[in-house]
Length: 297
Length: 272
Image (cartoon, rainbow over all chains, first blue to last red; front, top):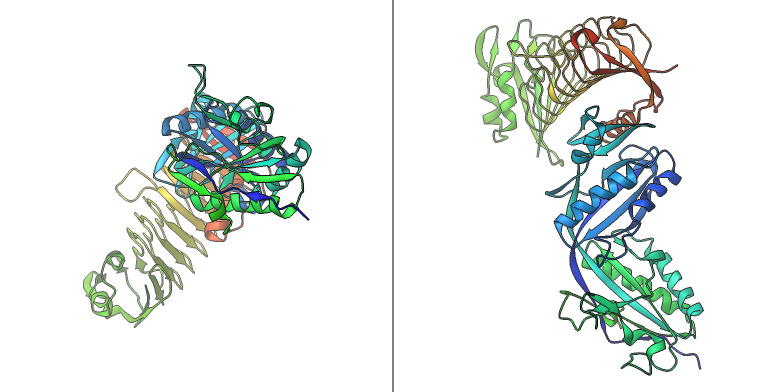
């Protein structure tokens, strides 16, 4: 008899974050992607990166402010101050430095984040501002011509930490189905998967036996520690991977989780045991994404 | 919202001052209120109802539309201080159209006389034929030219266009006369056809984009060839907001000047 993948009766616990959408354009898609990859590099977790960032979508020429190929990025942080700092540093070091690039805001809100307004000083007095429609842009002279940068990015509310865990027999089968889920989630707008390739293997819990650490390995899900700790894994499980989802709204995260989990369920892979989720008992984050509710089970 | 049609009752053969017509932006849209808007014709006070037949209809848009039919070069101050909504004129207009305009749209299907868009603050003006002198320049008695908004002229323009301009965008698809961008301080002017050698005299800052060749003397110094990405941004903006197509990006030669005024204005001359 074929074994069904179990969806555990649990929930993912997520937190409010600050988010901004940015659009990077360049002469070719390749160079837009280079700049974007550089921008979202080292932005997997706020635990040590200061922000979580990822590529939201590829934009066609007719979807960008300057009619060139572009990439839409979402960047999340815990506070307004951190978000502003991370955006400015990454824009200056990763986008302005990338050949032919230009940088624009991809959303609007009342809360402005200084972008071209600060980066313009790199122009050393030769920068020129231009107002097009209601927005101001800065033209900063650089060695390949000009770097065009919108004066402000904009901050809105977001949610970080939507997640689900894939428990299975071995790394080969778990990685295979998780990759399939990532492909489907990456097609969605308003969400990003900040970890490498969209997948995390080092799920964490809050705190540690070492005083200085704010997070440490989630030993309950480490298959190699089954005999040493009160493990949440049974005999069949030899590997666990996690997909972490940051999104603009609860609906976006729910939708992404639903599509990701359904993709895995649809594989009917016999080596996948169950789908679970990471939470902290419901005491830390105000957003609880109940797996069975999301899947209408 | 409403569609308001103002059709001229009798031929207008002397100056008609339509400055107060712009109050239509703010008043309640009833026939009674519109008919009583004061105007000046032949230096005498009159009312809208004396000049126009009014037809008021509801439209399905989120803004009001005002149509003026039967205008000519005596129709002065059309769109003066215009604040919102769309104003469409089916023929020529006189001087001072869109002066101090703040927002909204003004579409003129004919030509305009002097001072169109002078001291304009915002909004969009499209003139489908020609404009005389002082387009987007400082209004009479003031020192500040246009400080915002967009003006598109499909035809040609006379002298002193964009003089003292401070911000905003002017696109001229035809020729432009003498002293264009005189003492320009900022903003962008784009000219598709011929221009006079006096272009950019005493220019301090700002940008002139020239799509055809011509001379502008030694007041401007050549400063290299660049990929002008800003033009892509401008083209996308014009296409998406006003359905106006600008040419594809090309390489441009950049000049700085006016040297005689220690200016840092820039002229982009299309290469080749």
